[in-house]
Amino acid sequence: TIDWGRAENLLWIGKAYKQKNEPGKAENYFSTALDRYPGYRWAKHELNELEKVASV
Image 1 (cartoon, helix red, strand yellow):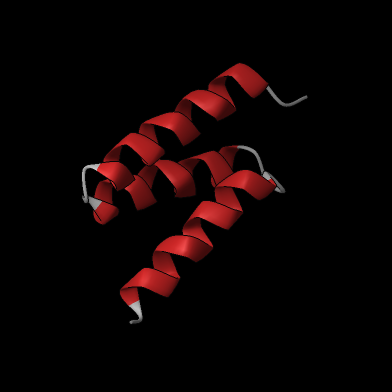
Image 2: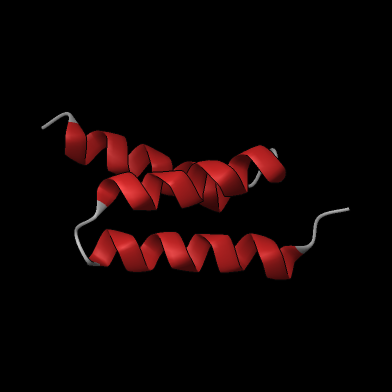
């Protein structure tokens, strides 16, 4: 089963790094959330947003 508390903690830490303009650290947390909880759409969405910004 998914431990949503841990999944959200990883996501919120990643979002904090994203706001601090540290995309590398943010990506690590989003990727970890997705690796531990496959199918976690919110983490996948955040990774996609980082990739869009990086490709501009």
